Amino acid sequence: MEGLLSVSVGTVFWASVAFLCVLVIMKRMAWGPIMSSLKDREEGIANALRQADLAKEEMSRLQASNEDLLREARNERDRILSEAKAMSDKMRNDAVGRSQEEANRIIAKAQAEIESQKQAAITDLKNQVADLSVQLAEVLLKDSLTEEQKQKALNHSLIKEFGAN
Image 1 (cartoon, one colour):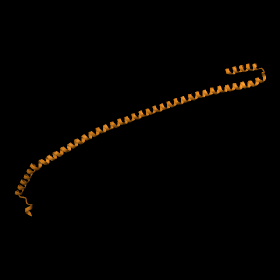
Image 2: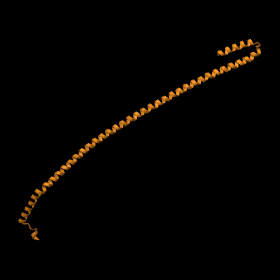
Image 3: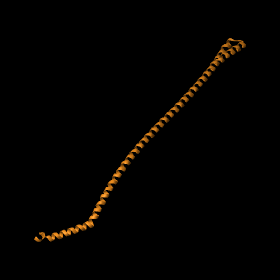
Image 4: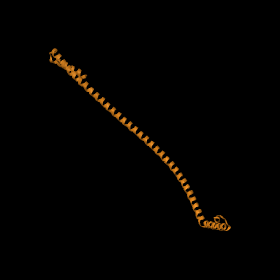
């Protein structure tokens, strides 16, 4: 066992030569591709970070744009609601005005009809009173007037008097 644990100059020399050979081979064959892979990975990560920053900026712009669109949509909604309310008020006021005019027209027509009926009733009543007065006077005068000519004169004067009313 002693041989395995003992260090000799030849073994150190050949181990160093083998290590240097492996180091040179590694440097020529593996070190370049490993370093280029690391560099490519570093560039990929940097590109991904730049893309993430660009995407973040784009998202913030889109969010601002969406907020602007939302604000415009709300303003448009408010404007449309305001116009609809104004139009509704106008239509209601127009309908109220038209119905008020119609009611006034109907009332005026009814009042004119009432006045016409009243005048017709008054005229009819006057005619009936005149007829009754003439009949009454005729009955009374027939008894008191014996002469036909006096009776005619009295009838004529009564007709003139009642005809004027």
